Structures are given as C-alpha cells and as structure tokens.
Length: 264
Length: 264
Image (cartoon, rainbow over all chains, first blue to last red; front, top):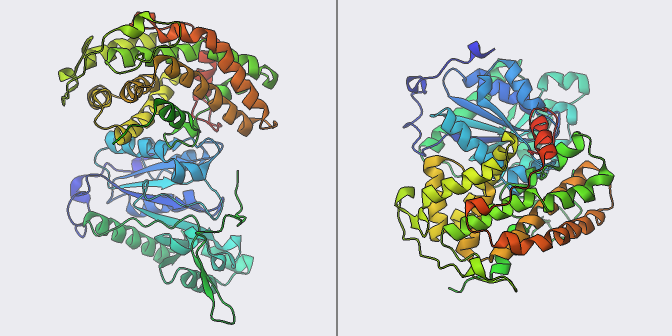
C-alpha cells in the first residue's frame, strides 16, 4: 500500500541528474503497445525501481474501465492519488496522438497537485501496433512487446517498434514456454530499429530491471540538461523493401490506398 | 492579415476532429443509456436537450460574449433588434483579471456573475466538472488561435487566478473574439451537443451511422424557434433556466462507475 511510496524530497534526486527540472516540469514518458504485453506491469516495475529517488505520477488511458489505474494503485508501488485515469471515448490512439487534450490536462493537474514531480508516466490504452504518442504529449516513449505475442512481431516493425525511444521485449521469463528465442527477437528488433535502444525485460530478472532503470535515468538526465529532443515515431515508419535492384525505401507519405489495421 | 469569416470559425468549433478534448465526451448520452434510456428514445432525448440544457449553455455563451464587450450579437438575426444593438466598449489590454474592464465592469466580476448563473442552472457536480474540463480544452485552443483578442486575454487571466471556466463561457469569449453572431453561437452550441451525443451513440450502440445524423438535424430544428430569444440574452439573469433533472441524476451515477468509455 502507500507506505511503500515515501514522500520524496528534493535531496533524494539522483546526484547524477543535472539541475532540478530546468524544463520547469516533469519528464513525460509514454508507454505504448498492444493489449496484454505488460504495460501496467512495466510501469509498476519503473515505480518500484525508481520510486525511492524520483517523484513519480502516472496517468492511465483505459479503453473500457479504470482497470489499469486500479491495478497500479493496488500494486502498492505509488501513492494511489498519484495515479489518475482518463477516458478516451473508445479511441485510445486519438487520446495520445490526434487530440491529446485530456492527457495534457491530466499531466498538468498531476504536476500541480504533487509539485514538484520528476517523472510523469502516461500509459496508452492497449491498442494496435500503429499507435504512438505525439511529441506534443510526451518527451519520450517506450513501446512494449512481449515474447508471448510471438517472436516474429519485432521483425514486422511499425512506428513504435521501429522508432520509439526504447523498445521493451517483455516477459522474457516466458520465452521457454512459448518457444521464442529471446536473443533472436531482440536481434530482429535491433535491426528493425537501426540499433535504437532495446531492453529484454522480465520483472523477475533484476539485471534487466536495472537496465530499464538506467535507461529512464539517462533520458531524464538528458531531458534536464536540455539535450533531449522529443522524437516522433510517426504514423508509419518508412521501411526498406529489398529487391533485385537493391531495394527501395517505402515512406508511406503518398500511400492512401494502404490498408492499415485499425482497432475502432 | 484578413480574418476568417465567423461561419468558418463556427465550422471549426463544431468539427468533431477539433483537437480540444471533445472526443472523450458523450454529451450525457453514455450516462443516459447506462441509466436506462432506451435507444429508441434517443431522438426525443436529443430534442429535449436541444430545447433545455443546450439553451442554458447557449445563453451562457451569449451573455459572456456580450458582457465581455465582444462582437457577438452585432450581426443581427432577422427580426431581432433590441439587445443586439447594445453598444460594446473595447476591453483594454491588461495582465490581471481585475485590471481588465468590459462594459459591465471588471472582467473577473463579470465572469463570476456569468459562472454563478451557469452553475446555478447546472446542479450536478459531475456535469460542472466535465464542462470545466471541456472549457480548459477550449481555452488551450483559444489561447493558441486568438491570443491577442481582449476576450481571450480576459478569460486566460481569469483562469490563471480563479481556476477553469466552463466551456460555454470560453465559447462566449471566442464568439466575441471572432465576431460570431449571438444567434449562430446558440446554433453552434445546440449542434455541437447533439452531434457529440450522436457520435458517441455509434460507439455505444449498433446503428446505421446515418440514422443519428437525421436526429441531429431534428434536434437543431426543434431548437430553432428558441434561437432568437436566447440570442437576445444580455444579463446572467436572462440565461434560460430550463433544466433536465434526470440527466443530472444520470451524470452523478455515471461519475461513480468504473466502466465507461466517456468522461461524461
């Protein structure tokens, strides 16, 4: 319960982090990915790993319920009042990209009510592979897949997989049970991402949690130093089609006929 | 730079794609359906709203525009003259809300009176909260698009000191800033409410998507005889007090649910 979420003080801010919120607000970190890959669990892991040293708030975007907010509150990793749910009108991808108003207002409210916060984590409602956060809402984003979703998903690419600031391949402890080669899946992901960061995570594997923790601190440090620039993964990443002439880049800039799956 | 026609502004504000947070709202429809309203009764319910609660919102917007000294009402609807001819003073630019004066006194005092009148006609806290959330979304939009308009400066200053204004008040300020006529502000309010509910209906109940479009126009038609009267509202006391107690009750019950698609 809340007793595991001590009131942080400014002194508890990691010394490695320059300045105290020179941007004037918390780092806003989005967490996106399909349903069931463990986004809420990942956020609980972040809170557990960093709750002692960072002042954290969480916003969830559930589709039908406030289930995710309740899960996180019951996980006892954060003061329940620091976890807020917003409704998305059945359009989770709209709420994080086309019209981010509800989430922006919730982030502002959280930061005002618990000023100062270091980190606001915004969890997308579980949507499909094309949902990504607008840079107007978050400074950085994590895209989450899990090994149980299939080893080939990372290879398929997409904006979140290809260009989120971090790709997490979650539930690696399940890999032996679902016949997935984690090393291969991570290698596929790294290739799809042109070597952007990938973490193979299991909340039961402390080494992987430490890797996630240090990634978050790294982004926070760069954000505070003014060195971090929010990246837009885009609605659909340009990708390379190999063919006999050497291949070509498919940009999607002029492909209205493309039939992208949509989870309305 | 030339200004857009007021009709263009109205169309922008009425467009469901406008990124101001509206997509997460159902204009009280989800609360009504969960409260037991049969789908077959939705057309009548829409007409009921168009001739009661929508007119409260519309009157609030009209009075706001008029008291802040904007242009609303300067375009006289055919057959209506009196209140539309009231002289409008120009609000001098100022930084604090109390330093901003309209024809009816300091803008903050004017806004207080309008908000009080609106709140007295909107007894359910859940609906007032939802309206203020939408007002914040509208204010973000207004501050971005018309930052120098005296009406927008007045509500921005008020918001900073006294907290969020309901959507109808922000709409009134925008109407004043953009020259939207009082009658059209009324029509916009009625249409937006009906269309919001119609769009939400398609996410909640299986219907031919074109069916609710007819219902929206029927609701607008039902409100039309009231438009001149509401467009003439000049003081907070003039704002219609036509309530809908059942809607208020449903809104309160809905606010306590853990399973919902829409904020209200």
